[in-house]
Length: 210
Image 1 (spheres, rainbow, N blue to C red):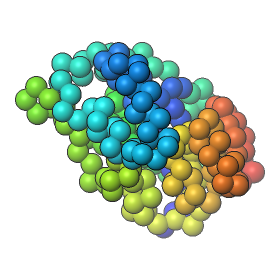
Image 2: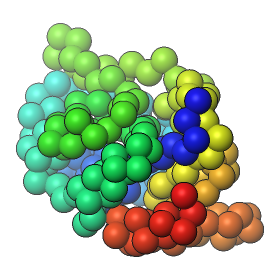
Image 3: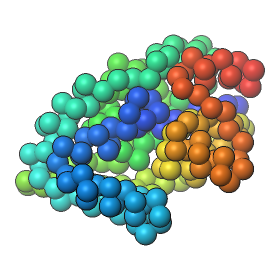
Image 4: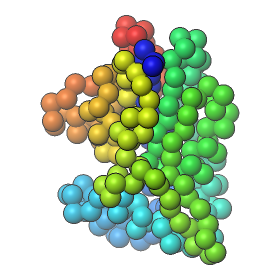
């Protein structure tokens, strides 16, 4: 049983941009991307359906340039110091990503000694095709974050996210840090959250909370 625990998203939260979207953009028609993005926001398609449409069964030859793109991505300022502070306070940091382990592990390699666990979707190569494997795919979320949270026992949970992939996690935690689309969504449903732009701001707020 943990007294406090941190559940944190990867794409657009730890990274400064959504790598799941950015990695696929060079390979898809912009108009088609907008069409399916609109269907996601309107509720015509689920997140699981959209991500599987974008990646599942696509050519494996797309993967190397995608990984090159991941290598060039930026980590949000203050993340290194944030992990140091959480380690100092003995607060576990659990990364829950609706994106791919190949992407997140690659970017988080320098930090894994201070991350308690990383949960993400498996992207494998089957012959000349990419395949997605997720034991937490409920048809709505490709990786249902609240199911992963249920693996842990804790008294107080902090969630940090940025997009609609984090909306269920955000409503299941005791303290939520939100920015961008997630912040807009939580404002719309009148759910309390703490805005942030970098991890220095998160650390400052947590000093008073934890």
